[in-house]
Length: 308
Image (cartoon, rainbow, N blue to C red; front, side, top):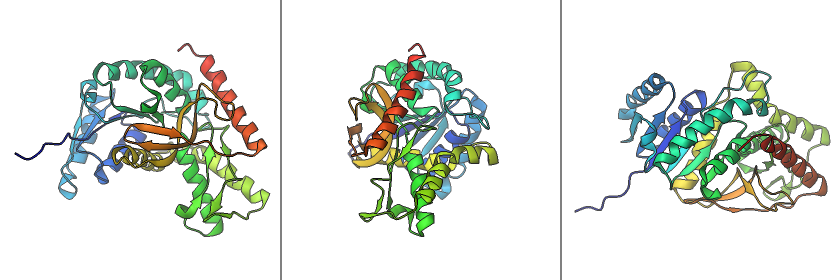
C-alpha cells in the first residue's frame, strides 16, 4: 500500500479584497492541497470558492471550499485577514477599536478546533492585532505571526531599485518597527551586493516617504491594497510549508531587542516549519535605535490602553 501523507491545509478567514486575493494567489501557486474560505458573509465565501473551483482544470488538484471554523481542525496555517476596512485618510491605528471585537470572536472560534497550527495575522493594525491574538491564544509565540514590515520592505526595495535602475530583488534593505506611521528605514544596512547605496539625503527621504505613504496613496486611488500583501502572505506560507529557514521581516514578540520588550514589531526573522525560529538582532546606528524605540513606545501605549 502506498504511504499516505497528510494533506496540507490553509484556511483564510475573511474573504474581502485581501483575503480573496491571497486565496487566489495561493491557489495559482499550488501552495496547498486544501484551501478553506471562511467569512461572516457565507454567500461571498461560497461564491469565491465556486469561482476558484471552476479554474482547477487549468491548475492542479487543490480542493477549495467555503467552510466553517470546524474546518480549522488540522490546518497547517490559518491566515486572518478579516476586519473592518481601512478608510481613506484613516491611519492603521484608527482601525484598532473596530477590529479588536472582531478578533476576539474569531480567535475564540479558531481555538476550539486547532491547537497546533500557525496563525498568520494580516489585519491592521497588524502588530497590535498579532499581540492581541498571542495573548488571547496562549500559544507559543513562534506560531503567532504578523505580516509585519515584509510588504513595507518590499516597497522600499522596489523604490530603491527604480531609482537606481537595478532589479529590486538585488536590493537588500529593511523597514522595521510598526507596520505603519512610525516605521523606520535602516539606511545604514541598505546595500546592493554589499556595496553602499549612493543616494542623496533628499532622495532617501523621498523614497522613505513614498514607502511609508504607499498604502494611503493606493487606498485613495482604488479603495484598498491587496495584490502586494497577497504576494507577501504567499511568501510567508511558502517559507513555512517548505521549511525554508528564510529571513523575512515579520511581526513577532520582542524581548530585550535593543531595549524593547513585550511588544510585537516587524524585524528580520528566520521562518521555517515551526513558524518563527529565531529573531535576528540587527546592528543599528544610535539614531535608528532611537526611532525604533520610539516606534515600540507608540505601540505599547496603544496596547496598554486596551483590556486584553
